[in-house]
Length: 77
Image (cartoon, rainbow, N blue to C red; front, side, top):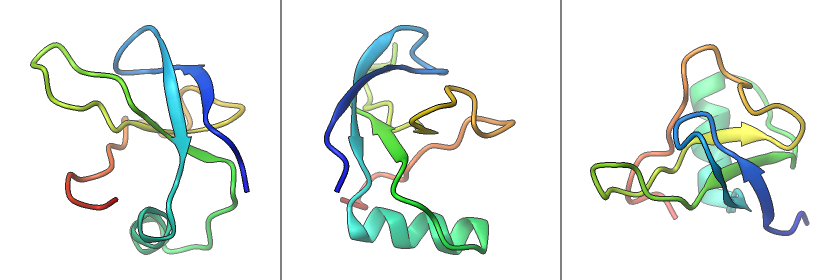
């Protein structure tokens, strides 16, 4: 299982801790993408300018993995 990583964020424009996805988050992403998701997806734990949690998704190797930033919905933990 991956561990939290300090990575840059496409929406925050700075570096923040990113957590690996939980099983529920991974299930949501698999349903959204229509394919199985490997263990290299992470979610930003930073805070956006409007003080809401960022929750932007990225892979370990690509800051801009999705053409349009994809945010994990609130309430899926």
